Image (cartoon, rainbow, N blue to C red; front, top):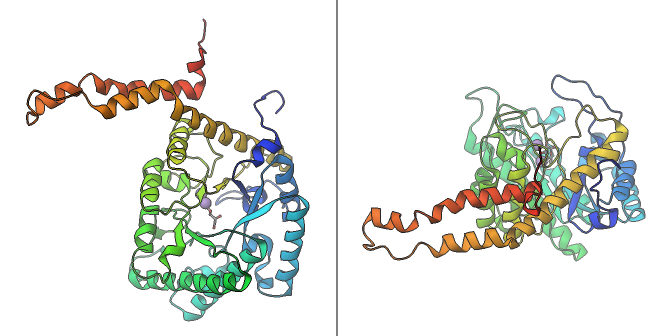
Length: 397
Ligand code: GLC
Ligand code: MN
Ligand code: MN
């Protein structure tokens, strides 16, 4: 790390709304065909190490920290008070809480299963997470529904499943309004997270766009309390342009929370750390977010690779992910004020001038012909900024 250089101080890192999930740091390297490569790490260690690195916010699934059988019981209260102590000792805040509705056998048919008792249990779990979120001072609740879909055709009636899913969210929002009212706190921002096809079968709400249409479907009692937590890789996975998906979320007024990571199109949810695969696209994404004043969390929802050791997770994986993000974010600011890009953008928007005949396609095309070369010039300039070439960096052979 010292040889690499380019690291920010923990104080600088804490200035950004960068959030560290419990599950990312404690991920043991297991996968569909792969056994764990790291030993378990508890929340006390994760919070302490995040504080040392300079990650100022922590978030968690309910069952990352509370065993399923202790949920809603004394065990939960005891753990929540230990978490509060740990957070305050290290000057961290809890940004977000999320309910695990995918790992346990009870979710085999999804949290919106046919059996009413499963759905009642799901609603209770969501309400319990909302209460926990308020106790921990969180601002956000995230919902990744997991296997909300089907393995085999014909078993599930889609509209019914979606109605049942909405009932769970309605219960969470109702509980939120009641608890927030009692505590004099603002209600949480409830953010839906889509994932297109992995790890489970066919998915009913595969994309952020599908989630927006679900929010506006009329099934939610409080659509104004529900927005999106898009994940970069989840949009890329189905072959989309994450930047375009984010733009649509911005226009819908629903970009509230953002899971940052990287990976490949049409492959599994490998959750590689931000900027390691698509740094140029990431730079573009952050230009968009900066230009639209996004001020929500940047959540490090990635998986330190199986090849990284327990020591490496905190010594290399997290600090490098944070530092690449900060650099890309600051570069995005540089792009917005870059004189070459600004001039090119202004020229494109001014257009080529009046055509000799405004209804003649060839004449309209002709006045813009030279201008359009600026598209490629802008792309070149973006790459220059990314690799430092705009500061005169060249290779001499
Ligand atoms: C799971 C998903 C992750 C999501 C998180 C929040 O860990 O893999 O993408 O952000 O749940 O519920
Ligand atoms: Mn995610
Ligand atoms: Mn993912």
